[in-house]
Length: 144
Image (tube, rainbow, N blue to C red):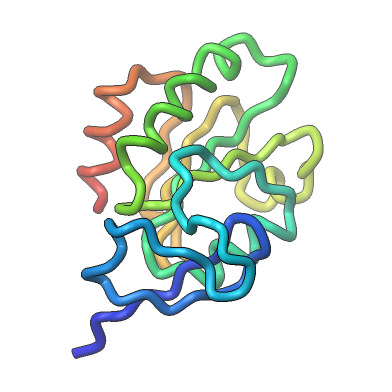
């Protein structure tokens, strides 16, 4: 049984192979030495999104948002807090739909905020609208 996972570095996007047992022990990137889990969401453009989703074996929770969206602004600190609570069970990334319009279109994002949970590139859950921290954690863990 292979007990290693591939994890993309949120800084340099290098793919790191980490033993599962070491995920909770503050693993560092082999290339740039940054923390692989820094306790905050990764701001992702289309290319960063694609690389993280393609090269990360743990689930990836995506917050599709926009600067002008009131509920998105309310959701931002909750999503940031969720990163502290949910990493390293999953990677949290934020995608600004105004800057990554093709990505939002590809995933048919119709309202924001929209949360999407991907695992090994496949969508396993989607939730439109803002959530509080407890409901967000419960929703994510129900799909893990």
